[in-house]
Image (cartoon, rainbow, N blue to C red; front, side, top):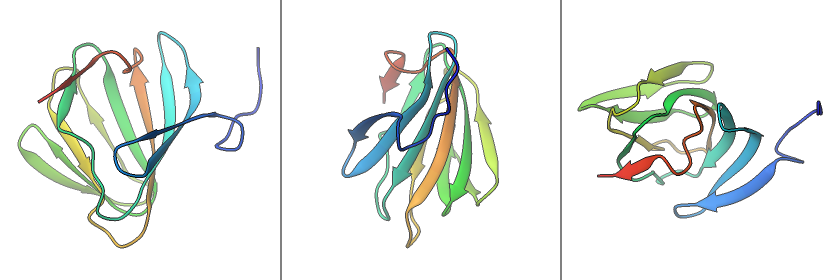
Length: 114
């Protein structure tokens, strides 16, 4: 069924310390999530057994450690991460970090914390 989706009507969840996520698309083959990470917050270092992911920054600056390399991803930039590659996202900035994470197949239930 087709419908217009946004943070206003997407399934909301919270993670970490005060981080928000909204499922914009949630199927077995594809997941699109919009997330907001406040300044100073981060996710746990992990990898996905099957899911490949693309992170695309909407506002703020993301710092992402990928397989022992550090990347700074600015607004309107993204980074692709293959399955089984350790990664960790940080908001080291002074404003909220807002981004899309697109996963194929879905990443929920596929995460291994390091």
